[in-house]
Image (cartoon, rainbow, N blue to C red; front, side):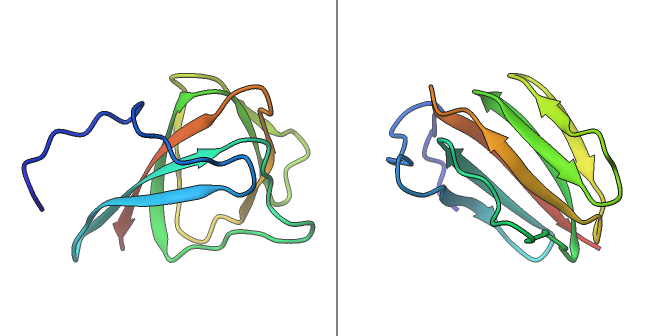
Length: 110
């Protein structure tokens, strides 16, 4: 990894047609991604079921997460963060169409 300075709000990829995932750091212990969404959601019936714990921070925009077997969706606003344990099935049920939603996702191996 280089020592290059990165600003997470600059040089955003165009996410108007599809969500964009950029790998920032990856090694044996951790993977860090910047994810940019604009209106994208998980496909109907699709659930993330990851082998890693995920810390997610919503930097900009707004989104809703749905967790399997929970009726209430989790609304995320700018600055909100949460930990999604490995194998906690979840999906993205809404992201803002008005502006980019910028996520910082940190995955740790278990």
